[in-house]
Amino acid sequence: MMNYAIVPHWFAGYNAALEMLFFAIALLVGAYSLKVYQLSGQRQHKLFGISFLMISAAYFIQSVLNFASSYSMAGGCNLQTMPLMHALNIVGIYAHMLLFTVGLVTLAYMALRVKDLKAYFLFAAVAIGAILVSLNKLYFFYVLSSILLIYISFFYLRNYLQSRKSNALTVFIGFLFLLFAKIHFIFSIDHSAYYVAGHLLEFVAYALILINLISVIRRK
Amino acid sequence: MSKKRDRLQIIYDILRVIKEKNGKIKPTNILYKSNLSNQMFQEYMNELMQKGFILERRAKISKTYSLTQKGFDYLNKYQMIVDFTNSFGLNELVI
Image (tube, rainbow over all chains, first blue to last red; front, side):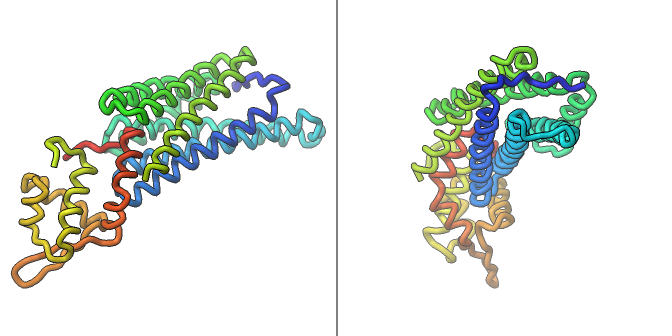
């Protein structure tokens, strides 16, 4: 069974545009981290880069899906193409959930500082398996994302408390907003207002992450 | 050098020492100037060679080290790497 989030009619199109923005920011952060990895050769940079690239791919798929949904809602889809649209929608939602989950698992694995690939694959398999066998996959995906983001936010809180630098604080608040956004998405299955709020919170989260990246790039 | 150094700082210190006497420095000099134990020094040097930051040249009785382009790039962009690493919590544990 797959329950969908309720998207307010007026927000259709805006959601896809915001998701395209999240895709671009996550792609930028991921690509920059891999560029730093080429210079430093440090595993943490590689894992962070890969996780953000996966998250960016998840947003890209979600954005394309929502653009297609807006198009069909506007009457651009007839009865013959409707089943195809529905099938594409299902495939897209699964791809989004799996990519986003593996992205967060990679980020959590990086934060755990464990150097064992077997542990990583086990961690990813458990997360993906749990989503696939759950009765309400989208709901479970948001709950699982929230749990992973709680751990990741704690990791960034610790990172800030150790360094006491404003950049580290910006990143911590960014991930905290991402956590709040995912918690809002849990309730978006029943209430459309939460869906909008979730997107706005995500916007603040990625804006903060982007501000941090720009400040790092400008300082070099 | 500060008392507590993270991994990036240790790599920076080793590379900077090699840069100062590029192509002519012997391992004992690097060990002395990088302020590391012998075991840690060996581990870092092996890693730096493996990752292509430094080159080892063997002569008849001794060996010397020099920086590769990747090593020079690391030194030039060190501050950016540190800022990115610290803000996103990407520090690796020191061996």
